[in-house]
Length: 352
Image (cartoon, rainbow, N blue to C red):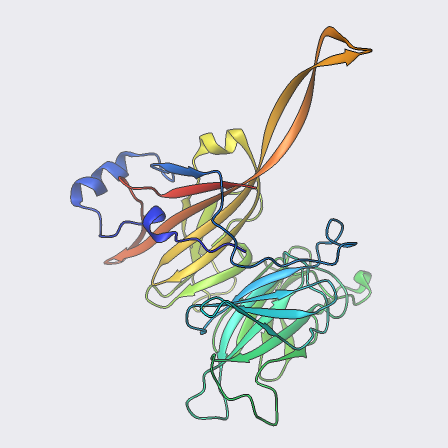
């Protein structure tokens, strides 16, 4: 795991001037002004490893940031539910209770604060939904602010299993639905939708699911709420390159109020879009991590019995490229829009 200092590369240190704003408006919507390339990642802070016999064959590993932990805690869950937390500031590893089920790398994670029974101690919950059908696909990780006392009747850090999202269609034999998108609506409610199962809400106090309708949420993965703007933000489903803004508090199904392209069309012509991940940096600042496959045609001459053939063969090789894009959503009066960088870098790429 590498730690990147993205602020100097992705954002202005000070707000752009009026001239810069005018120049940005002339650019194509969503077109990145400049992209910096870094062939090598910084030196890893720590290496997480799977069992040798499973390293190349299983997607059952899951990472998540734990909010409310100062400089940051990163949680890693392996194929058998074994959980480890890495303290970024202290550069130390903490053993955690074992999870109740293995979590695929594409699982949806939603963070919520919760009321604790100890004054002065901040408590949090990380709800994790596996994008898979069947029982045992939903649970919550309870944790508290770093540095809290370790002696207590109930552990400070614990996993609790939760009922999986239901399915109501008779022809689906009551199997659980496969989540495609989810968001925290308020202090006690989570909304989840499935492409083939509709939308549901989960009451975190009663641990009960309720069907909300046959519609689906207008994004994929987890959405992020920005209280300063009163809006939720999410990325377009796989294959798209737009950032959506919508309101989950005013109407259901939610209607997309704003949509912005965050990738250059020319970039999509050269690379195969795989997936995107939205990271909320607070107050309308976001980092969007997008993974691509870069196709390369490699030509070589066939050599037979020590002699070169005149015929050339072309092999196709794919390399993974990750693009980090910084965007700042601002409100000017009643208008919500993106502020793009017009002089400094607004994206950076890394090759795997």
